[in-house]
Length: 237
Image 1 (tube, helix red, strand yellow):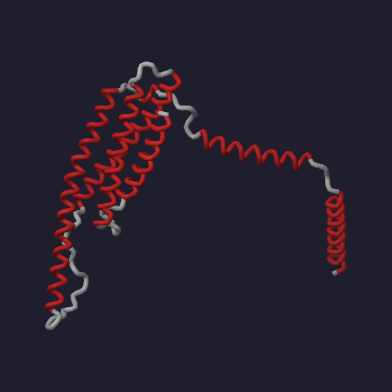
Image 2 (cartoon, rainbow, N blue to C red):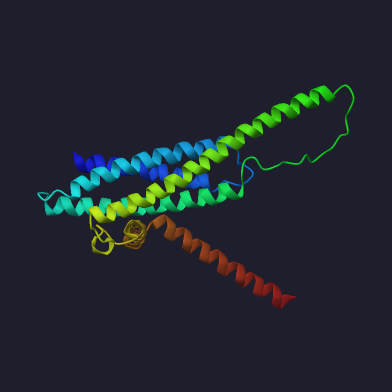
């Protein structure tokens, strides 16, 4: 049960980390907005919670002295996968911190078109500018608070990685994988080649169709007659 629970937590962490990675790639682009920053914050917090829960389960399992050799090997593989996932999460969080600092939400946006409208519409324009300033102020407050929180969480993830290495000593190069790298791709390619080869052997070894042989003979005879007729016409001309 502990192993299945760790697998489920690690699978959820992998999906959340992948989602966070794709969201980080859009920071500073045309799709960047406060909604994106809020989604980044929620995804990051979920990934952090899953990382804490997964690390606690794996640490408790690997520090159990009565664990069987096969079970320990499986938990060590999960530990290596978890460590790699944490490294990617930390790198994406650092990238999000750098991009968020370089592209703040409260950056001034200059209007592209100046219509020069004045007069009775000045009151409407004043209310619009007031609402816009309030929105920018709210974005500024969220942006500053989120970047400060992100900076603290980056440090927490780094401390978590160091704490894991101190509590459980599982060098990555000592963990053996169940299959070679790219084994699934190679098995799929070999299966396709074997099926194609089987079909070609079957076609070569299958019985000859008499109707096809007769059609080939007639076609050859017609072709020879056409060639002879062409030669005769050429000589007569």
